[in-house]
Length: 114
Length: 113
Image (cartoon, rainbow over all chains, first blue to last red; front, side):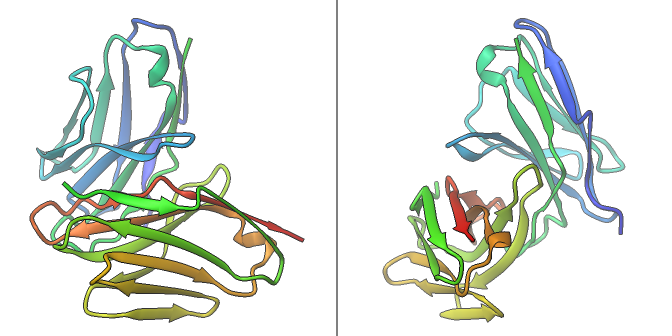
């Protein structure tokens, strides 16, 4: 099976701009979750999509949004970028139908906001 | 919601020593506890997991123990090797609704040759 892919791998933006990140899950997986990873803060949950619906949401401002398409590919968007949004953004793909799901992570998108 | 605390944040050991990373969780409905390893510049990957109906699980040099009463679980790595150097994340998933794991903040394990 092909693994989880994320594009682009690196992004440099300036404050105030917006950005869209993409995640392609493993074939057959219906759930995609997004995480923000910064040094010392671990993996902070942004949101989860299951069958094109947002099923769970973390404690991030409304500038962070996402969506999922019928082929389970997911995008997240960050509007009005701030310096503090600089981070590694990881998506994780899984079947989404059980507590015991293994999360398969993508390689991440490294976002730098200048 | 669930809260997972992980300690220590950094652990430095000599090659061949054992390493132990400890986590506590708050939600008594949590029933699945995976551990992920993230090597430098790589994605997190599952290395071992344990379900709430099991007290201990081993896989070669790594083992995980779970104490449901105390709500804590630990990762044990024996005979550490330099390739064990990575950030380790514990997580807890509750049976109470969401299938989303709550992650600890991570432990940076450094194994000195």
